[in-house]
Length: 126
Image (cartoon, rainbow, N blue to C red; front, side):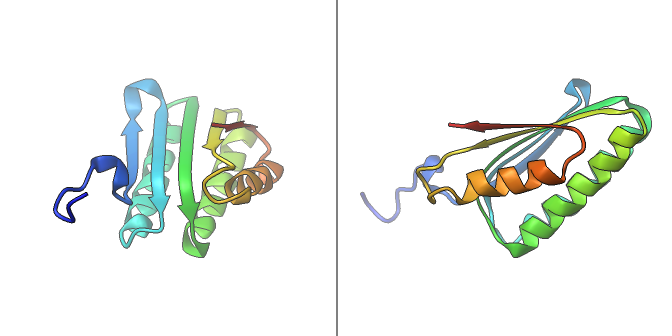
């Protein structure tokens, strides 16, 4: 393949989307990009605003890799969703991961996060 031809699937990107009408936030890709912290800060702000106005929030994660900074933001998200759950909000995380890309690290990360969660945390291996 020519070095000038890059297919989108080969890019190491991190996308976060907030879909208010669906009560959904999605985070997909390589959570180690230079701007990941900005996207997590925006995600936390979106979570806060959404839970003030709505009774339900789902977050779908399909992260291929994370670093310690991303793990810190994930802990903050779990902590905030635990508070929302205590307040009677319907919150759920969908954690989709593959055990083939980087061994079992992302599966184990999902299990660790699920263990910290007081709400519904669903793990699926893709």
